[in-house]
Image 1 (tube, rainbow, N blue to C red):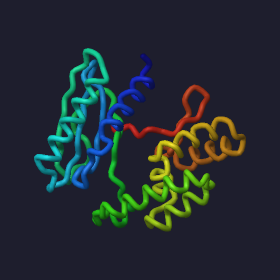
Image 2 (image 1 turned 90 degrees about the vertical axis):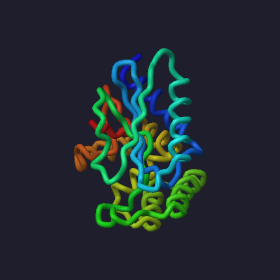
Image 3 (image 1 turned 120 degrees about the vertical axis):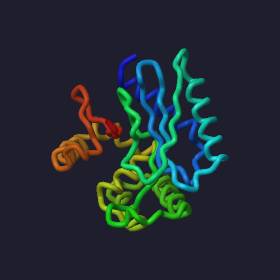
Image 4 (image 1 turned 45 degrees about the vertical axis):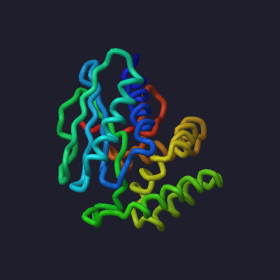
Length: 205
């Protein structure tokens, strides 16, 4: 199995297991590999309780069940933290709680607002809105910059798939993808793999 296939399989497994299990006390989840060992790290707030922890242990059990002989290690890291600290060969975000922007990162976003923004993104996808309209609506609802609005949009599987298709098949979208990578560099939301564009999955190493 290629590295990319392994990443996709693990991230999809973790994200599927997290459905319906995420509370407002969970800030982020990362997943990674140490050889054949799966490593899940949960970044949690101070109000993360025993019930939350039990749900995440169930998540870990569901993930390891999707694989063969692999073992799994779970780590719970309390915030404040600069991010995941357990060293692994490869690590990716599986879940990351929305934060408005760097100027207001100290303001914890209320969960109902997060739900409203995600619902907005999904509604615009169902309505087949244009990408500029999507970004405009997200910026207005969440008070974020363009790059952060793009990250929010691409957290939606439908928009992510659509973007991946268009940046490889639509000439104008290809130009915009190249321009985006040139402007944003390491912070780009798009990567180039084997001559094809892909919505980047943020690595944490």
